[in-house]
Length: 86
Image (cartoon, rainbow, N blue to C red; front, side, top):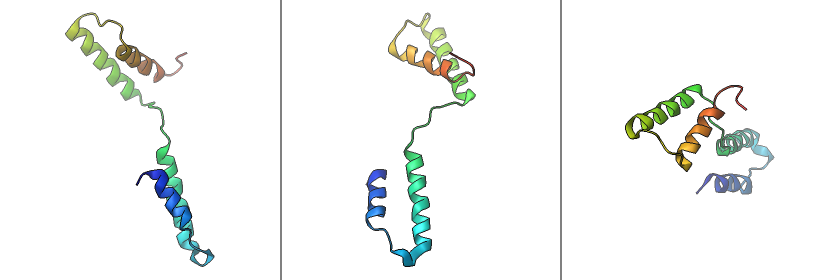
């Protein structure tokens, strides 16, 4: 069962109004599940620093790192995590 199915099961088996505390708990559970399904971009400066260190390692190990989809992705992620980058 995935998260979408879990939410669907909860909603399809919603308790009646006599179970107000259970309904409140299920509301919270659905909210937590939905929030966990949203992919958030990495903004931690340590993440960018780790990527920079890895890119530097590649340069030192293999000499000049030629442009590839992977190195382009690394550079994009590094730049996107720095403040005030356009």
